[in-house]
Length: 423
Image (cartoon, rainbow, N blue to C red; front, side):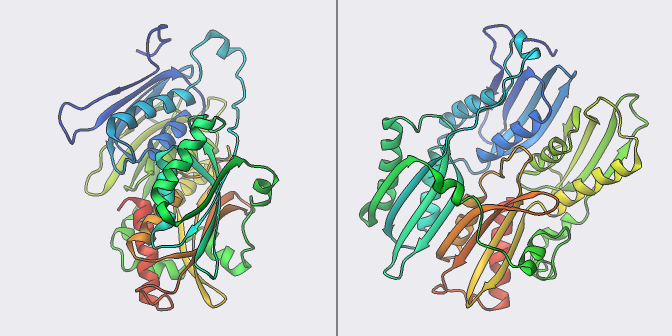
């Protein structure tokens, strides 16, 4: 039963499985807030966990969430991961105090730090560094990577610390030591400091041409993407998404029923859409994956506590959900002068948060393909409808693939997309 937990009760509980291979059960029991389910799913995705199935219920004051999760790509030992996961989930839950209902304190943003290091280049280096930062629970906010003609790499990583300890000398030393362990003798210098005006200067990205921006941010798949996806049978499933609304089953809620292809971060994408549209979830059930598809039943209300009866609002919600299922991430390859550039984009939440682990997944895919990155940058780009997080990778031509060939470019796009989607 939903209700206020006692002083000794844990807001977040994680139950370990009885046998290997079975899911862990994550239970969150705390005061409700709009977008809480999105925040929970975001943390789960950030930890490399896959949601096997789930239930969400709320009475508008108190929320009860149960998720069955399976490790997908954990970066830390299982026991350590779940202890840290519990702390992270507790950190996003509203406080269980009576004063919470009177005054909600605004969330405090984490300070941004600049990690700057110079080292000798080698294949897979960017992903190895990204992996260390992820293991340290440092979230990458912005990146600027440059390779010099003499084979050196200058990396600027703007990061925040999920542990909120990066201001301490111990935590800073730990970060530099872990990087030195990975870079070994190739490390020339490593510095870590609180970011200053250079962070604001690097907020944006290099200018996108109108044609490139149109291809990257358009609602429908581009012709290039359609051609590349012909190589990936899984992509055909995305177009079979079904979203229906029903106002007859509940006197106070609109029922949203979704049947769509499963992908990594699916529940995050759906909950992010509801959060950005100011829609409250009263009850939701997420069924396990069946033949590559998921079925979801979600009872929702508008922010003021009413059904969605307006036909235009119904159509807008259905279209937005279908778009997020069909096109959760944008991946294209383009020419940048004589060079080849990989671009990846994902929507930014209205709260300003980007999608977790994108940089990690893209660098992993490129490392697997044996492709070196000559330069890379991460920044924000605003269109008339929303803000995007854009990742730009200038690819090194000295690799096994002929980057100018259509087949090679299709292979890169599909590998990156499949890695991001968890296929």
